[in-house]
Image (cartoon, rainbow, N blue to C red; front, side):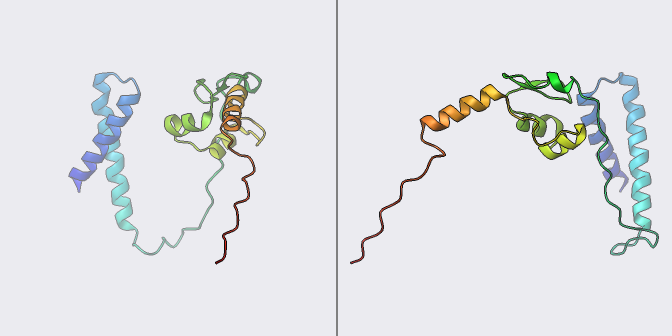
Length: 153
């Protein structure tokens, strides 16, 4: 059990250090803290009988995500050429892929995080226009011709 906890702790610390700057002497301190936390959590979960929640447990809904301060003001986040990510400030033609890959968020979570309504664009206007023109050029999105009914013999 301890070997598993140590493995998980090292994976967590490795992931953290790969994305954050940390002085080398603090890595071992972080590893110890993560290991101790995981060990404590695993001991606590062993005390809970499986199959039944503890007697004092009551179902609760998850809290609303805390609203964050946007990276740029909302009126500057939308330009004809790009949409600025309110989390990191990156300019994107379309935000969905960036949010999923870089932040692990879906559009509804992102909207809730900043209190955005459905009218806030997630795709730059010029990019949408270019895609619309390409679709029209290739005949996409129009009415399909009625197929000829099969001939009965």
